Amino acid sequence: MSKDNKYLVVENYIGGKFVPCSKLIDSFNPSTGEIYCKVPDSGPEEVDAAVRAAKEAFPEWSAKSPAERSKVLNKLADLIEARVEEFAQAESKDQGKAITFARNVDIPRAAYNFRFFASSVLHHTNDCSQMDHMGCLNYTIRCPVGVAGLISPWNLPLYLLTWKIAPAVATGNTVVAKPSEMTSVTAWMMCQLLEEAGFPPGVVNIVFGTGPRAGDALVSHPDVPLISFTGSTATARLITERSAPYCKKLSLELGGKNPAIIFADADMEQCISTTVRSSFSNQGEICLCTSRIFVERSIYPEFLARFVEAARRWKTGVPSDPANDNGALISKEHLQKMSRIKDPKRDRPPDSTAGRECLGVPSIRHEGDVLTRKTATVFPLNSIYGQPVAESVERILMGEENCSATETAGKANIVDTRHYSILSASYIIKSKRPLTASVD
Image (cartoon, rainbow, N blue to C red):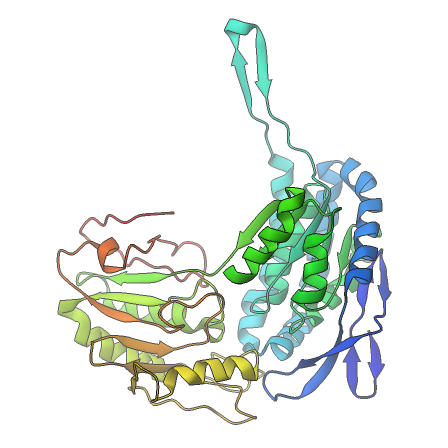
């Protein structure tokens, strides 16, 4: 990374070297709205160079034993853990998230991703079926595919980028990754550690840029047989179209629909703390954030009052202040999207219950509103990542007693994911009565 006047200038990482790009795009500090970084505006030329480097590195890397690759991944995890504070500060500034969240969730999880797959690759087994009547064995072996094209989003930048890189390289593939152009710094910082960790040149390549240029060139490249993408359904459709002529392997993680279901015999205190956290963590910019809450009618008034009270205590402010629960939305455009939901000229105007207003500096931060309508629907306004559910807002609905949860949720898929982590946002609060719901 070089200096361009007062701005940081990030460079692509190709074939084990940092490579400058002739075209740059602005990257903003979400908390201030000011430019603080210049990011490569990579296109087909840069992507092709990265793919060539990855293709050249594939034979040697794929030939290494799982134990050898595992050692390299664990070393990279060590290096990230030794720099947790440095990475956390950069992630908070670049993405706008609260420093506490970056310090306790994003960066530790990024290191853990490498550790998890470093261990997992040592314990892979093959399937084998004995066919006595034919005197033979039918078995399956798993082999590296080649160059993996990885496209990660802006909401959990290093966390989700490493979630893609780690399994790909652990299993012997090489990668060309494209982080979001809005959150590129921690990916670049990780590149500084790859050689020290023991990655041969070309195994991990990072190309920065926009989806229409760098992303399109990557998914369309004939020498990239595997694509992993996290983002919108609309973009996934385009990726599928570009990949179809080559029959590429696709892994697409798209927008989620995440209802919480709360029955009258559930622990109310647990329900409130769980749903507030699952709604507003990381400014609500997680695809798993709760997008609607179904509440049994008999406890709806109490739940509503306590939910609003808890939402008022959820602190939004300067991302660098450890006392704040949330920081800034990712961009002014995202703030405008959220503000339109509150516009009284909309067809379904809500009334403010919590009364939180946009903050200054210059109006990219936004506190979690709880908005109500006469239909007994509550909308805690949060920033939504991915495809919207109920117009990108939180919805609390009164559930009829003895009514099927699946019917009430509009046939939404319901899954109890409380055991995943604090980032889990599809919750069924345990009830004494049985619940039948479709599970995907």
